[in-house]
Image 1 (tube, rainbow, N blue to C red):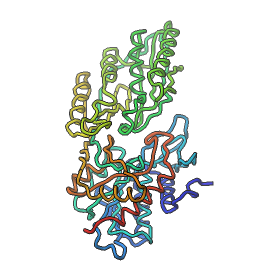
Image 2: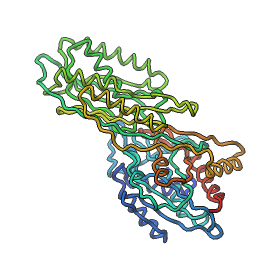
Image 3: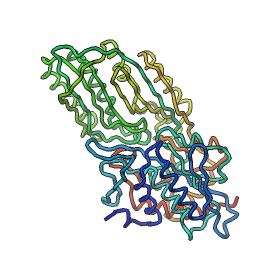
Image 4: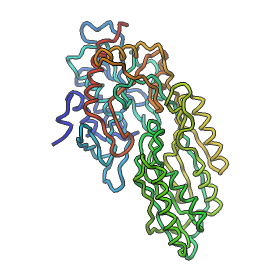
Length: 484
């Protein structure tokens, strides 16, 4: 039986089912967007697709609410696509098939797409409802959020009519977000010389697996392992043990996801086989000790492999040194917001092969100056090793507004419904609010959402009960929106 079909509120989950059925990788959301555009038009709702491909759907106010201020419900259509090794899943063709476990809807071997499919489904439920009371509503569904914020960056000024924007893209029920980090992608490239594998050398694959992964912003402070950093660290250690030669390396799948797996093809003298095996076993034990409590399931193994050419020694020394020294993790904690990461970097993707190196990092900070401070440090480091460095897709953070009337509405409704205070937070992750706010100065914004765990990694899950609570709160907030 389809687990989604039995969930409540059905008004929300039926739309999430649609989002599971229609593939929507970043930069490939057109099929879903066009479906939703047609869906809205069949219901007599006005729609607009802007030059960036974002979809806007407008629903008039219900009788008696015509004088209320307009509200924009905002979410992104794309999802991060990751699967465990050995899982046969084509994210461009196959639907997501989740299961229900202990009150959580979970995708066991892939990402679920609750980030941000649940937010989109909640907005669609508002658009579809014939009983909700609300003022003028717009739904803004952006593209390409997970791969560079392309939709929000391309959003045209002047299209949105609402005064208030509700972003439904955070992952902690009972917490309202009033600020977020900005960021920029750091892409580095370099060529290298190759030579034949020396005679008498064994060729092996070394694999780092078993890490949890996660969101490179929201989870960066948890101390989880990064497979790229672990593997490069091991290779540098093995260079001390033997004449190690690197033939290729591949690790990570997205700049905004913590790398769970990484693989290197190496060669070393056959006579050193036992010594290398012992060194790898010792290194695995060390990693399990260092990552105890967060990623003790890490494995480091070697297996026979094939290679015809390896990297020249001088290039190998420069490239591995740069990757080894590359910053990863928390750079600085906020001095303004207690317990929140201010600045960080994620070494998300590394690919080495066929004479070329590419690495993709994501720098984040609550301060725009902090983003560029760390980005320039990354640039300087890799430039010293002969890399070409490109900064791409920079976007601003969302500065908190302590006088937010929308936040007051959310807090008042939550207090009335639950008899306690909601949390108010700033998140070290990229929400589209900062970009949209720069294009629509004065727009009052709040972000909230249900409990989601493991976003951007296989095993992503959403708490079913919290989705119902978000739906209830959203309905009450729409009723409480003040007059224009």
